[in-house]
Image (tube, rainbow, N blue to C red; front, side, top):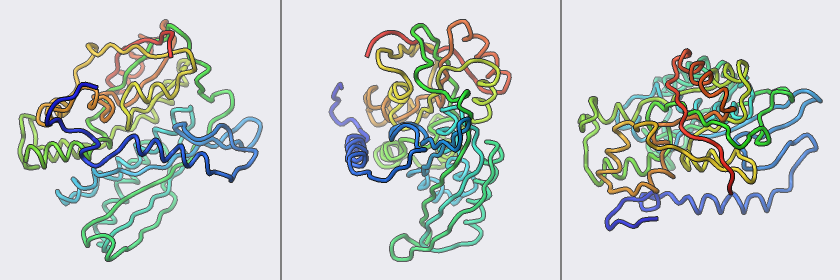
Length: 335
């Protein structure tokens, strides 16, 4: 990676990707629980559990990360639940599963009923967009651990997929097309670096437009796009070889998770222009391109891998559903 003196990095902002990867490896080595119905192991976008010969449950859990600090600074709490749902259900849909239901967990320093109601209303509205139901949750008050106005949210969702519809890496072939689906912005990844650069290093006020056309705080609080229904609609209309939810690690790292051994992706970076917020972070923090790539989605929130002959039909299908989409690359041989 190219080194730039004074350049901001995710590690300098307090997040170590390497430590996270190492923690996962240590966890894998220590797991002893299990049942014969479990399909596959750790590392996929969703965990799979067979319930009969034809059906599997898919489950995923996640949080929103330090994007919550923006919501707290702006005292706006009705969109953060949208981010939570997007981060969870779009991991489930990667394997072709339909999200069925979700539960949430909110930890706070002090229960403010109106704030909790705003958060949960946002989660519920986003579940409706994803086609699943919010069926329960828990709110915990942790005075002394969290400040009176601090909180964190997490959630878990479960979906179902039939064996014949399960999307696995063995579907992918050399020559397949990679179709990108536009993100709505940063979604819910990389906020520790974004906040470090924009708020601490550059000192940009959240109410400043900063050449973005709207206040920085509003841009940073833009809800995560939810692709679940769009992906399921596409999979019903065409043969999808793979989906990849672009979250922490960036486009190429997440796409690599759904490719079989011996294949890799070749991405054409000139096929799209990332939103101005990404350029602002890179410029104000002198963030190297490689660091931007592995921290942010850079404008692509989900990708579909399809046969080259189905590429245009895939783009047309997604655009008809209101999702900006384009062919951004292809699958080639290589490790």
